[in-house]
Length: 468
Ligand SMILES: *Cc1c(COP(=O)(O)O)cnc(C)c1O
Image (cartoon, rainbow, N blue to C red; front, side, top):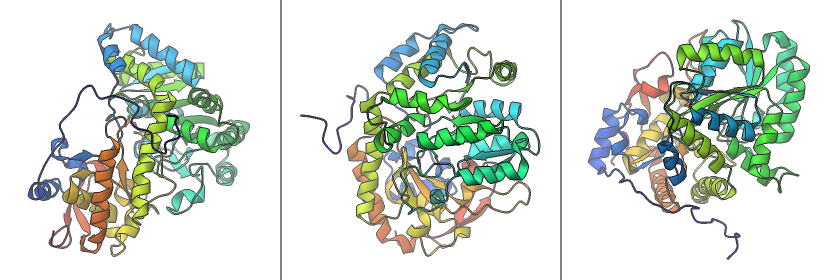
């Protein structure tokens, strides 16, 4: 048997199992209502299949669990830090590594040290916590992703690419001195997990460096990005995932990393920087907010798990199955005409809620309503990525109206099988038949920052799904 099957089975055996939630219909109706129609506020034990996020929800391997037992919990100079440092240097190629409790810890340090009020930070589409830290330090985020990324139906092999003209326009407008760095996310989460090509990274790096602008990667899903490069970009077919990751980062000056994604752990992150002076400043800051530069808010064992996880994540059978499992779900939904962002991304399927609920205006939060309805109907927990996540303009206080109004079905790594994907697809296809019965929502409580996490809503009609 060769490896030509369209969907190869899971490349792992199951050694430990975990029971899934099993609420009945009335229980689910009550649970989502009590959660204020916000899936973030539902309980894990009430979910049947939990596709809320791929962040920290990874199943660790036997080797990672063994690594936990090798934790060196010394306050300073833990051997697990040195292991992590050597793996990150080997795979990413950056000079300095500062561990942080998770990705946003690294974002906090980078943004605080490099952004002055009035600076601009271009990026290929915003990410919630990333933009929050940029704005918190007085920076202005500028979206420089290609136009195709904002169109759910546009097909482009590298839909996360940066539009060099948009980047150049910003440089002409404000000057390179007001742009401390460009943030290049690989892949682009909110665009649908869309990749960036090496060709684009190279061109961005040349333009940025010509104007004294640093290139800082959001490396969160860099392994998934490398898989797309291997399978879509000419000249990379025969390179290993590790070689591609290394080449991607060779064009940059550092990165922030959420280990909770492509390091296959449940917690952790780090900041990488080549610049010695910036690194010294980062060590000064990490002691204030995270801990010693040799643990950054993590236990020794967590750094060990992250070091092992990063190497496993770059193994081809793992990453190939990962991305293909997402595609499997995407193809099932697509065959039934469910509107979604295409091409399928690396970590999730993004259902186009605007098209799914075409009877609802964006100001009654179609994606929030659809995520709630999916939970009520099937026990599958997804999340809103639309107007609620986009938040308000910090200057005018007006809502951002993002073009993409989506529900993200995010697949945790190594947790679910193809059979689970079949259930998810069937549930959403059934719900699609009742889509006109789904009610819009309105605010009950709107938090000031990162409102999607804890905001609460009520239905506009009497029931969330009429007659269900
Ligand atoms: C998750 C994520 C982050 C933040 O990382 P945390 O570990 O959740 O703090 C940053 N950027 C992207 C693209 C992410 O998906």
